[in-house]
Amino acid sequence: MDKTKLKQQALFMRTSLFDEGFLDEQFIQLEELQDDVNPNFVEEIVTLFYTDSVRLIYNIERALMSNPPNFTKLDDYMHQFKGSCSSIGAKKVKKECTRFSEYCATENFEGCFRTFQQINLEYSTLKKKLVTYFQVTTLILEKDKMKLRRLVEML
Image (cartoon, rainbow, N blue to C red; front, side, top):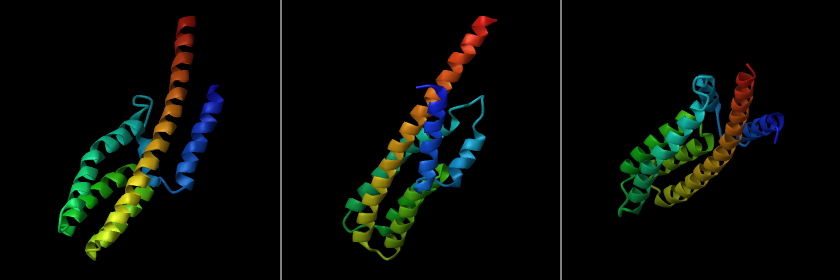
């Protein structure tokens, strides 16, 4: 695929992530920090988020299995996870985290459990979409590098 089509595809994918409510303005702020020195900055931050969030999700799952559930501890874990989601602009996941906390406040275990299932769905869906988006942006960067190498070779 030529670079122009890849750029169009990346733009369409990025626009869809916002239009479908998966991302918010925090993601744009991360993009503004990206430059030629670190062209994969946003991808690296998102990768760190997904790596670090595994522990938080595990803690929430474990706390949900305790009997009786400790809603204060559940809410603390969710608060940490929500903060991580906010840092990359994961809008839908963050919204579900807020709902989860509301259920914790009323000690509604069923609400927490159902909302946690929704969090996992939104989290996984966003991850798949971002992985695909970053694959396309990486192809664009590789094409730029190839073009630069050809130019250098011509000198």
